[in-house]
Every structure is written in structure tokens, then in C-alpha cells.
Image 1 (spheres, rainbow, N blue to C red):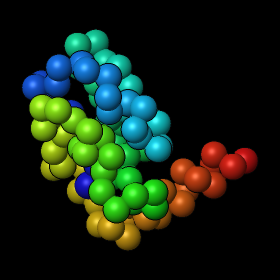
Image 2 (image 1 turned 135 degrees about the vertical axis):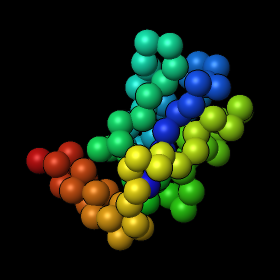
Image 3 (image 1 turned 180 degrees about the horizontal axis):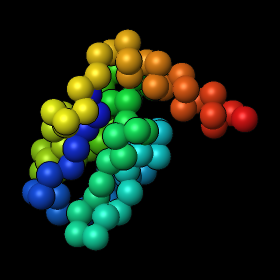
Image 4 (image 1 turned 90 degrees about the horizontal axis):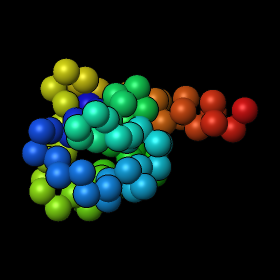
Length: 85
């Protein structure tokens, strides 16, 4: 699954720099996670780094983007291959 940032976001700016896939960006009112880039940090870390640093616990799994660990790993590999081109 990709992660999602809920309306409880306080725009504290700590999550964006923690994302190794550059999946987090500033939205109109809160930060946004691009589900095409979010691997829940699979391939980089054991746990999602944005969740680790979020002070208000507003980054749950996104039920609209269900993926297995294997799918997240494949997405990570595809993202890294595109980045290294």
C-alpha cells in the first residue's frame, strides 16, 4: 500500500525531506503523497520514514492503493532504474 497524508497534517515540513523516493510534495493545504512513487520506504528502510518523523500521526496506509511487499519492492526497483538513466 502507498501511504496517505490526512487532513490532520499541520504542514510542519518534516516528512518531505525524509522521503527517499521524492513522493511527498506540498499540496494546496496539506502535504501530498504520490502513490506512484510511494514504496513505504521498501528498498530503502525497514519502516516508512515519514511516519517515523510525523508529530501528529497523520500518515496511515492508503486503502485505495493496496500493494504487497513484493509489489512495493518491484515499484522501488523500477523507480531506481528510471532514476539511474
